[in-house]
Every structure is written in C-alpha cells, then in structure tokens.
Length: 125
Image (tube, rainbow, N blue to C red; front, side, top):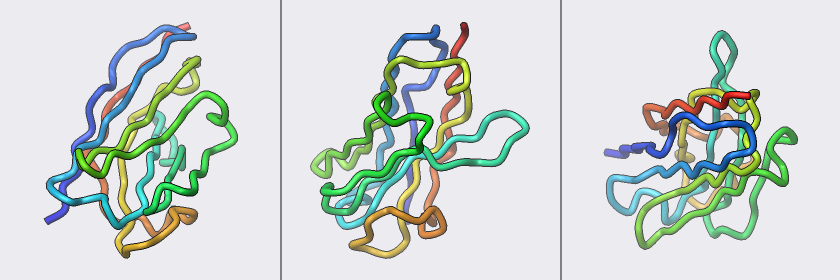
C-alpha cells in the first residue's frame, strides 16, 4: 500500500524559506515520477513541481520557477520541496504525489494517482 506523508509546513514571512518533505512507506518512489501540488483556500489544486523517475528531468510552474526546487532521495524514500523567497501567494496546502505507473517523467498532472494528506504553508507579508 502506497502511503505518502508530508511534513515541514508552517508559518513563514515573505522572503523566508521552508523545506517540505514527503516520506514514502518503503521503496515508494524509486521507479516513479514524483510531484508537488498545492491548493489555496477556495481554489482548485494546481501543479507546483515534478521530477522524473530517474531524476533527470524537472518541471516547475511558472509562478515558482527560480524559487522552488524539487529533489528526491530514493535511499531515504523521501521527496523534498525547497521553497525560497516565499510570497504570500504561496499560501496553500501542499500535497506530495506519485505517479501510478513506473518510469514516468512527471509531465502530466493526470498521471499522479497517489497523494499525501497535505501540509499547510502560510506566508505573511
């Protein structure tokens, strides 16, 4: 059973940094593309970043390019989202996700079928 558990969210001020972590339940990520999504209050969930199964390709939403970095540590079965230069508009619940099929590149949101419970990030101005 695939289980994803996010951590690292919290309160931050504009300009601060946070690092989110997503822990798998055991060899959860090693052959799969991973991603981060977010959902602001009253809005739909949107794509933030993803990384291919082999780590060679990464994709970012335009709104976070140059500020956020997705990374993976297969040995620790953990995915990270480093968030720098945070802005109030980054406030949202952040979700970790994994594709359902192995060896994907993470370029299509519809291919992510496993989700964590989310972690709240709140950025004040």
